[in-house]
Length: 138
Image: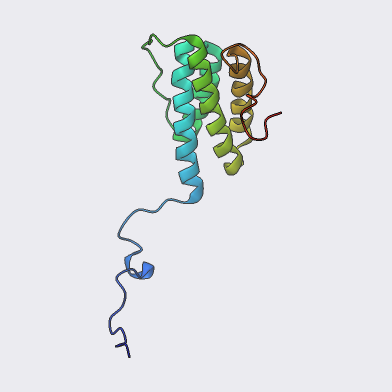
């Protein structure tokens, strides 16, 4: 009923393996982790947290093989918003560090999450309780 295919598929991986560069999963995770940590570094520098920024910069340098650019400019963003942003970035870094099995980056990310969670209230009224309208909220 159907005519058989007479030519090889253009999508055969073996034929085109050298056509583009390949990265391993570990290399991709290194790139992702370095990116999340670099973003966290920018927010940390903006908050003026020098020692924490230095620790983050060390991890970025280890992953990238070169020291990161440090954030020099300041914005008009209020500190609580910066802490929430830093908390989210540290959480992303923690997820990637855990999947990469990078203990040093995971510990640093978890410490930064704790520090930023303590620095910024969870809700507008300062309460850390989950909103009751959320499903499964305690």
